Image (cartoon, rainbow, N blue to C red; front, side):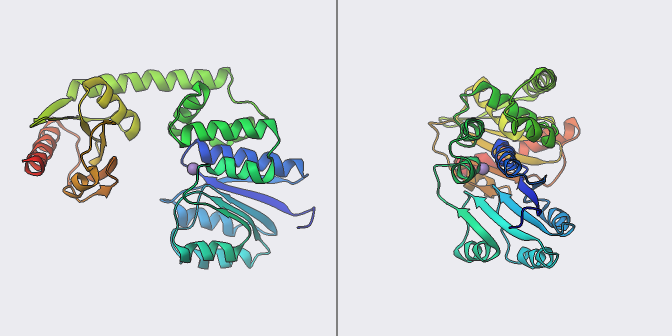
Length: 312
Ligand SMILES: [Mn+2]
């Protein structure tokens, strides 16, 4: 690695772990005198994201909290490497098949691909590149708090809210890599987001219905597109104290969540709506949008009908 080579960090766009990984990696690379470009990558947009990688030249690429989930994507990576680029590091903590793992190892000079792992991607990068740096330690701790659902660090919770509200992630990384995790501007943006979220909860409450199947109760409602599925689900579970919830968005996307002590297999339920997922959280899509009151009534009938069939 020549001292003059540029560096590009590609981190998972999804959440705190990706953003903290990008900050830790940039901080380390800049301490080595490198010029660093930060970019974000995601599963739904991978095709376009890889095109941006192809625009690089003579650059060392660091990929964090993300892996290619399709062997074909490595053909695109061949084109990236033809331009004098190298994959310097690939770090992730999500499950991947042996074939995919081998492919990543062939392409990257250094890999940290651990799954299952009790460390998130930010912690893995910190442990490799900056294990004793207090700022990197703090960022890794924030990421862990969110990635493993501890949610005990208030600033980390609020920062995750900002990330899911589409706040400028580049800006967050620039701050975080200097060790700053909160300021007045972030507080103001968060307050605005939270006010809107409370309004979203009130709208959900107006539409909420609770269905009963034997001993089991399920709350159902419609959420505003700006509310995240997990916030909406969490709100319904807390407020209506039901065993499970189903929440739909105007696009017809549905998500299912359950209370901690509920053992219903939500993956099976989601399959009745042509979706899928885990026992504890699953998703599906209605075959129509939910824009009008009539749409909503129809959706409630569909959901109640299928749940009656399932629990009956
Ligand atoms: Mn992660």
